[in-house]
Amino acid sequence: MNELVFKTTALSTAEPYTTSEVIAEYSGNSRKAIQNLINRYKEKLEQYGKVVFEILPLPSGQKAKVYHLNEKQVTFLITLLKNTPNVVAFKFELTKQFYSVREELKQRHSLRLEDKSKRKTLTDAIKEWSLKDKYPHPYSMLTNLLCKTATGLTCKQLKERYGVDASITELMTVEELGNYQQAENKVIAMLSLNADYQQIKALLSGGTLQVAI
Image (cartoon, rainbow, N blue to C red; front, side, top):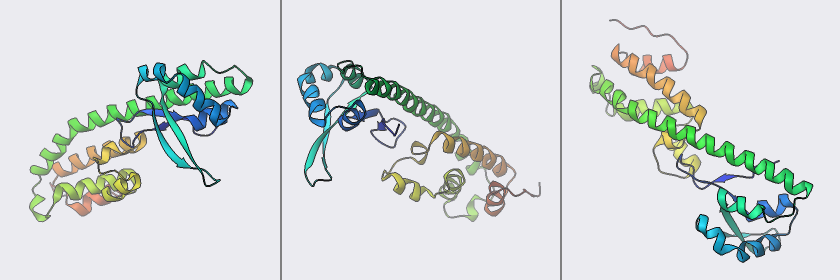
């Protein structure tokens, strides 16, 4: 199946959700039938959080109200659907995708907290770097290098990718965060050896480091 579960934001603190359009399409019900079901049980659904919606254009040129439902809300709602083969397959895949998104967000949040504890180490390493005065903005320069190494994008480009002005590590995938932390550890070690920026950049690009100790 296609993507059934989405995230409220690009941040690691996001919440997973699905939509009334997804439920209608993959359960074999009409958009109107699912919306009626949501409206009928709205009071119960709101015990699991506010029922939010957005107005989206349809291919016909008209506009439709599309509901966003969190995991608890949709779990309740789909129990009200008849268990046809389509609905059973949809329930199975939806459950799997909600779990996958929650685990991914959890890992990102955990790695983000781990990185926060390292930021002081990187900051201290830069403060003790004998070459720091050679560069106007050493912290920004090295952070941008780390971001490019981990994601292939500069800090600015990464933020533009998601349209969010947030900490760059909040916007990285689990794989990107792992790459970022590996690179960060290398940079901290290289700073302690008083490597210059070009040497650090070369090593992160797969070269070798030669410094005079």
